[in-house]
Length: 393
Ligand SMILES: NC(=O)C1=CN([C@@H]2O[C@H](COP(=O)(O)OP(=O)(O)OC[C@H]3O[C@@H](n4cnc5c(N)ncnc54)[C@H](OP(=O)(O)O)[C@@H]3O)[C@@H](O)[C@H]2O)C=CC1
Ligand SMILES: O=C1OC[C@@H](O)[C@H](O)[C@H]1O
Picture 1 (cartoon, helix red, strand yellow):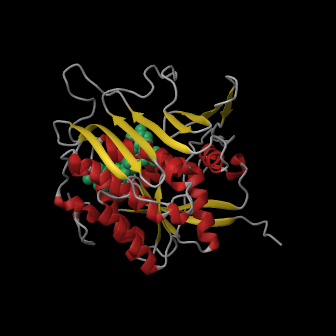
Picture 2 (cartoon, protein in one colour):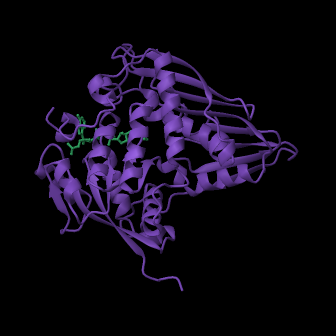
């Protein structure tokens, strides 16, 4: 008989920035509000590389229980025996060293996207998770939305025939009249020292839709790494500001077009007047997903012989009725909890191999565009004492 007590997971939060706050508040949202009753989440600790006070302020801000511990270093966090899983919420530049720190300490890890800066780093993290027999996943939250699940199921069921092409865009307009973009050169969005650039931050979601529709849905033995052609415009910092990628899956005769920019927006007026952010085109129909690509709330199905009928499906994000909070990051957290409960080290929805292949595509695209990141953040050599782990900048 199934247990009625939800499986509980104790989270430790590494870093105290924007997404750490959003994700942690989602962890603390009542699972019943999203009709989840089999798992629950506890926030038991947070660490800041800046100071213990900052970690304590963060825990207050997110309204974590008063028992949650504040740490002034990532090293202390990963050594805490009362934590089941670490959420890595540092800039992408830091993910390899930070996730490795946690994995080496024997912790399960959920690591923010982009998983790493290079495919080699991603491969090494996954090998370490395997060796340590712990759970590891890239936090591509969008994949766990009920909307994404429905779209993948529709494709797999053949509802739009054979999918031959997906066009996906995630672009934001930060263009300024003086020719710059509206991020300081030191900001992680454009700073090469923090692995800045449109592709690793935003374009990864466009690729996520390309991969969900053209790769993930294929039987395991049919999955193939694509050929990659990219065009990249570099910002004056050296990071990419506009990147367009065509991936070709030769066996399936399919193409994916992934677009990203910091200069022009997918949704020009914020009202979806420009149409769908994602178009999944099959021989018998098309699925259109309304953006933004990271957090879509509606999709449309148009059949070739549908007589002009458009099926519109809304998939809103449920809010916790008490706090009014809910951003949709809780679904990926629920996946982690279920994997831990069931002893699974890898998520079927965000498999290890797929994270590596997507990193390979992004690395090839950036190489074609001449984007190069510093050795400190591209090295595949783990160093527990790296400034990326100690915060000594
Ligand atoms: N899934 C999603 O929707 C989103 C995902 N992200 C991903 O999350 C990651 C973090 O992004 P975001 O929260 O916006 O970033 P922030 O700059 O807001 O926060 C990053 C945190 O990392 C820590 N950190 C450690 N070293 C550095 C450093 N040298 N420079 C800056 N921060 C450092 C800091 O915490 P401390 O000082 O406490 O250690 C800082 O607060 C990125 O990889 C990004 O791609 C971001 C936004 C949305
Ligand atoms: O993952 C993300 O999704 C939302 C964007 O605003 C953010 O820059 C990016 O990191």
